[in-house]
Image (cartoon, rainbow, N blue to C red; front, side, top):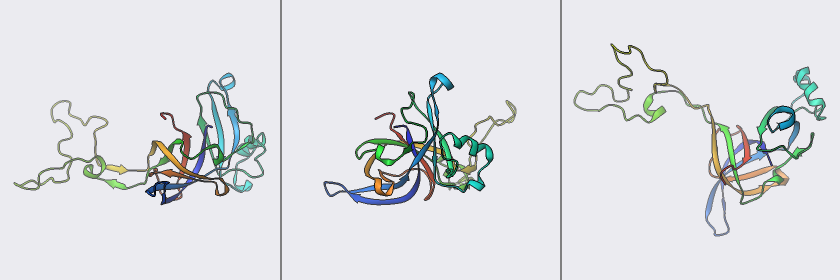
Length: 210
């Protein structure tokens, strides 16, 4: 199983077999049609191109509709198309729908999403800087301090941790346990939190390190 595109619906909690509360994230995953197949022989790498959601055909470009013709999905084009890399050539067929039934409770997945945006932030919040002293005349409690030298090299080095836009970056949480799979609702319950806001797009892949 390569992976699925899904939508983060939010968080809740369930009880396990021992009666303990388990925090879970509810993810609506799939069905994801296979739109194209990449193999080592033809493309030099292995991958599956899958879709998620629905979109009106009149709002899709002719180039994309032509691409969707070979998988038979041009009449009902997906709203989102992503390519998921594989370690070996896929066994799935063109046009096949991938669903949550490929996952099972107790297995582990890696979840990739876009973290919440936090706007423009200073170095204390952005990088956990300690800040300056708040006594004895200290006037730079939340400032970054020195960022370079005057004489040599006379510039600020690239990569210096500075205030700036925080969040809205791709993040992957690895090794999350699947608590429950509900095929009738296309829903997976994953233990713990995943990146992003409610309604954000996430990608589930079989865990690499489990």
